[in-house]
Each structure stands twice: as structure tokens, then as C-alpha cells.
Length: 527
Image: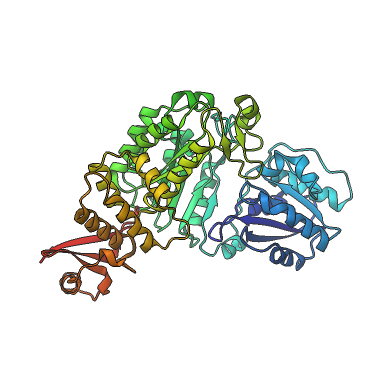
């Protein structure tokens, strides 16, 4: 018997790991010999000494670590520390960062690197180690998928984001993705429904399905959406979808979902056809736009849209055009990501021929290419930083809408201008808001009083008026608060009411928060 520690190193505490629990379930089901398996979850922000200390407590014979782009930079030092503390321990790595780059990790302290699906491979390796036999070759998937959701899992979850897999693989061939071109294996539908139900009762607020394109089988997706919509739960379920794959039947079903029950993440990636073609990305862009607009119109589903900067043949000007086209869709989140040349991806294999330069360290982001120079990348980073701190966090939405409606700026130009003028790293939000006002009030067509009023309303809806910057305040809020308390029938904090003009006030209803946008409801009163 081996004493085994399975280690997950998550990006944030709020995340949990699905992989290590599936691995543990695989050992319990498929190992021929008994093994004592303990799971440890840590984060990339924890000191290696603390992680090693937790592992040492178990005195393991084997330590297995799941490797990804978010934790790969931490692992070389951690492996050295583990080797020093436990000289005889067997170090086993799996996951995409290890399995597609095995030689590097074998030269950096790992004894074994698992390729393929670990819930089948790891039990074979542990049995071989226990009997001092040679390590087995890579195995093929076999048997039923593992249900990792046992009592130990739920005790460890503690309300963090939970993850669920109902299929594995992807039918599409996107060159920047590790799942591209693999066949899709759908797990039994009734098992998926049972696991969804269990997670809905787990205390997790968000459940993310890790299926690469959840709705690649429209009928199956419809049945699972229908199941989730019918649950009695406060959970939110997050799906990665192909926006162009929704049919009218599914759109009609989604329109019936309780507000906040479903989130969709739609990877548009680019609106520039040559970039999509070079990336082997298949998508009906016009249909994707129509479907996203149809979903947003109902206002019951949070929509996240992804773009990737740095795809072959797409220049800065062409990306800006695509960004502006995506922005006007009105998704709740517009992610400006950058091409990552992942180990095992077709794009990484083509990078030299395409003359794409990328960082040597994870996450292997593009540095420059024949279509984007380093200054172009800087401009994109500036715009992306501002986008993330404002629009994507639901901040200053009314003000941004107003500025774009009266100025000559297009969306990308506005975010870039703000990013260049107002570096925001570490700036308190109230100070940042004042800088936004001071910059935007000078733009052509912008009325200062209208902008101030919109930013004041945005502040109330964002954070219930807490710590409102002084430039937004006007004397007279007490009058507004008195009216608000009469209307609401409860006492409110004085910061939750404000004067917009001598004859108009606004207050926030802190009991009424939109489950889709996260913003609080506002009420306007005549004085």
C-alpha cells in the first residue's frame, strides 16, 4: 500500500480543484491494491514552506501534483523543496502543463509524468510502485466516469466555486486550444443530472461546467439546461458555449431561466475572418451575434464574451474594429485576452513559421508578431486594464454609455485613452473615479454636470454609496434620505441617498440587487 498525497495548487482560494478529487475516485475504483489517499488544496499565493509542511504531516510515499499554466511557475522550487524534505518520496506530475512538456519536468525533479486521463493511469502506476514493478504505459480511457462528489469533497468545498464535467473533448480544431480536434466523450446523462443536483445542495454559490463547448450537442444541452432551470436552488451555473450553436428551441428555454441561475461564456475570439481561418476557428459570427443579443434581451442570464488579441493576421486596427463590434453587443463582461502559446497546441508548433514571439514562462503570452509590434501590445494592455477595472466589474456603466454617446470616441479608443492617461495599479477606487471624471469632462461634447450625476448614480448602484468621493457629493442628501425611508419603510445609511440637482434626488434600495449584474436598484425622487 502507498500513502499518497494529491496536491492541487489553485489560482485563488475561492477556486476548488476537480482534478484531484477525480484522481482520488479513480484510485478508489480502479486500483487493484489498497492505497491511502489524502487530498491537499493550496493556492499559488501560499509560501512553498507552508505547502511542504502540510505534505510532510502525511509522511507520503507518493505526491501527485496537477499542473496548469497558473501554477507551473511555482512548481520547480516546490519540487526541490519536496525532494529536500522527503528524499525518498515519488513525485508524480499530471495535467496539461506536465503531460505536454514531460522532459522539462523530468529534468526538474519529477519521477513520473502522467499522460492521458489520470483517473485511469494513476491507479496503475500506484499498483506498480507498491509491487516494485515497472511503470505501465499510457492507458486508454475505460469504464464509467468517476463521481468525485462524496462527503469528504463537500466537507472540503466550504462554499467555494465548484466544478463539474459532463463531457470530455471538443469537436472543433482551434489551434490555440489543447482540446482542439479531440473526439467528444459524453458522460451518462442521468449521472450528470444527479451530480448537478448534488452540487446544487452543496452550499457553493457558483458551479462551473468545464465542458469545452457545452452545447456542441444541442439536444443534450437542452435537457441539462431544462434540468438546471427546474431546480430549487440559489446556485449559479456557468457554461462555456458556442454562441452560434444555439437553436431557437434552446433560446426559448433559456428565456425562462430564473434570473442569475445561468451564466454563459461565449468565445467569439475575433471578428476578423483571416485570423479565425488561420486558427482553424469555425464560427458563424452573424448567428453568434444574433443569439447573444437574443439572450441579453431577456436580462435573466449573465453573458461573458471573450476576444483574443494576437491571432495571426489580425493587426491592431483590425482588433479595434472587432472590439468595438463586440462591445456594442452589451455583454456583461467583455474579456480582452491575449494569445497564449500553450504546450501541446497547434499554434505553438506553428509559432516559428508564423514568426510569433512569446514569453518563455507561463502563461506563454504573445510578445510580438508580424501583425502586432510591442507598442501595439502595450496599447492593448492599457485598454484591457481599464476595461477590467471599469466595465467588466460593473463600474461606471452609465457614465461610459454617456461618454460614448456624446463624444467622438469609439469604445476601444475610450478605454485606451483612459488606460494611457490613468494608470490604475493600486489606486483606490474613489481616487480613480475622480481621475476618470477629470479626464472625461474635458472630452468633446461631455457636460460636466451630466457626467457627475451619472457617476454618482453609478457609485450608488455599485457599492450602495459607500465611501463616495467628495466630488460627487452635494448638500441636501438628508432630505433625500428622509423621503427614501418613507418610501422603503426602513432606515437607510445617509450615504445611500444623494442630491442630483436642487429639485431631484436619488437613493439606492440595498435590499434589491440584480442577480445578473450585481448592481443595486436606484429610485429617483422629485424634491
